[in-house]
Picture (cartoon, rainbow, N blue to C red):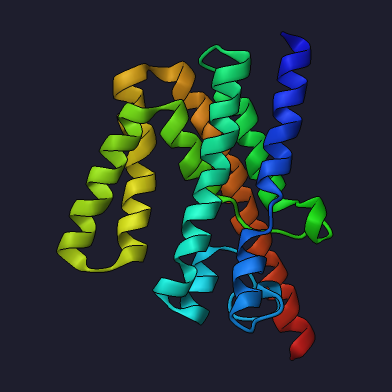
Length: 193
């Protein structure tokens, strides 16, 4: 089982490293999303710069990274914890891809994909919450935040603290990536002034 876990985790990292946003952006005339907009090579920056239809493949592709990696863990390794490990590897691959000099995105959609596999019941509640908030506000950013925030609450109710703690580890990684991006942005602003 140890060998299967190592191989599946490495595969999860490689899946996370697939440069979906860079590929889509280049097809639309932007060489590197890390140089424009909010400098995040992910779906949100692509949507802001390219529009929703052009960014849709990034949204789907980045989510698919987490789904594929977590699904690989479930299929190859087994156990409730395996999708968290291999999906977590996809988050790391998205954030620190070897394909882009270890400078990547914040891993939000890879987290979403991992959650869909690791905890489908909580994910269903989360999607319902996000849909309801979007219907009421017509703001995707608010709906996405509500959906993500509701995920561990629904998971705690449905699956208890152990799996929720595993989700907390992944969410902490995403939060860490946001904090680093904020610090990098502040440093860039300080150098420019």
